[in-house]
Length: 356
Ligand code: G4F
Image (cartoon, rainbow, N blue to C red; front, side, top):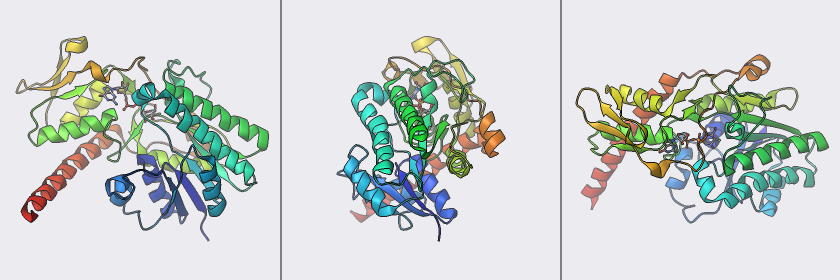
């Protein structure tokens, strides 16, 4: 019989790809979904539908901040592995709703840890805790497992507290708990309000005739961007290691937001020239002179984490993990997926208007 996995955050990008990966390994996959008025809608489950997973997994209604619901679900499932991916994951939003960030990301994690203890599953369950490179904050780069963390956002603080709780529970109760400290990872399933998908969607729309420019915040910001499919494989590898430990997953290469924009426009054959400075900076089509990108202070953050660059040496040496999908491939996949999605949306709209 295959192993049983429980994924919190299964509706997100990583949850969906991880579920697909684990099914491929013969796992029985269960996921946590939070009650929402959209619970019956297609959109709510869109990532699971798009990977054709919905009939191959079991979903359980509950809530990270309702310990009783978690206890009940975990007791019924008796999982071998728990992947704790549920989070309020948008850094800017965490400045606007810091209490929610702490509740979901820290107390939610504590609830999972306590469930394992209360149910006496310390020797049965392995727990993967989704820690984040945002915990490093303004620490010097490149960042690895030994770097002192200096978070710069409520999200980073909440994730760092959860990381420490995971370490404390590992040491105190001998539970197999591993932190994956993941740098930014993207895909066509990335939420539309993260910068990569906002850009690739904008580029796809411009390729189909959109006239207004893409509005962005800090173009100087630098990130170590990898592909989500590589990172969910890494999550699984972390839990298959002989002992519980913490690992950074990263590509070891960083680019600026500006670089990401230029690479995305290149996919549709347009070259960007960057002109002017600060909030007046613009990305201009070098052939037509059309303004394709502008800076909008609305997307600035109260503190900006300027530079993230991961050092994945430990994961490479101990787990033999490395990122396989290149930056250019990632950008190409995201832009092409958005172009295809726009065509589908357009056809559906035409279909609907004929039907009316
Ligand atoms: O895509 P982002 O929103 O990702 P961010 O803040 O790095 O966080 C992501 O990665 C973390 C790992 O380090 C995760 F823990 C976290 O959950 C999330 O997945 O922004 C990337 C950069 C930032 O510096 C931001 O200021 O892009 C900059 N940016 C510039 N213009 C923008 C925009 N970000 C967004 N979301 N929207 C903009 O218009």
